[in-house]
Length: 207
Image 1 (cartoon, rainbow, N blue to C red):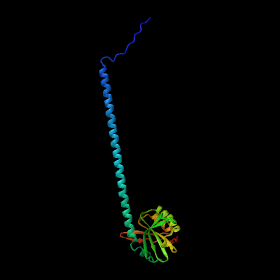
Image 2 (spheres, one colour):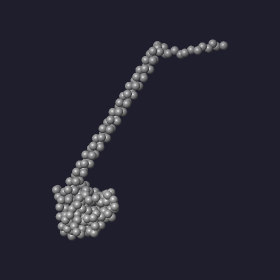
Image 3 (cartoon, rainbow, N blue to C red):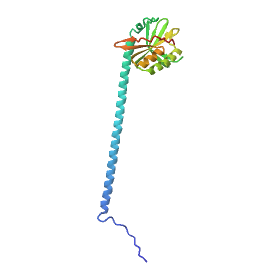
Image 4 (cartoon, rainbow, N blue to C red):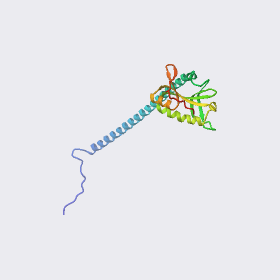
């Protein structure tokens, strides 16, 4: 009968328990340093992302503010003696209103706004001011005019209602679409605004 003995395997020849333990401790220390470095890099990445987001938000506000300033400047230039641009038409505009809100019936909740409203005893004209006018602006103004017509401001009640665009720049497609929809079109030229000559078949739309 073969003799059985209980044996515990030795460590590889030449390596002591103390050396194995030291290697384990070194690995543990390296793992700790790796985790600390990884956490540091993660925090630095988060900090940079937050800083980038902050700069983007600040720049967006600055750009938005600049756009509003330019839009306000164009609106001011357009409003100056705008009624004089319609000589040759049966309008005698003498009153100018800027940024006239249109409210839902019986409320103080605004539906939309008229950038510039020209008025006389018989006619009113809602002028939409755009810095850079494109064709989609025509569609938006048509919908805006429908809402205004349904909720007429007191100045326009009982009068014939017209509409126009005034812009800093305009594409050919937007100009043609505006004329086809019955809008007058004015464009900023230097420091003054000019009424663009409409096509021969132009028919100003009464809303």
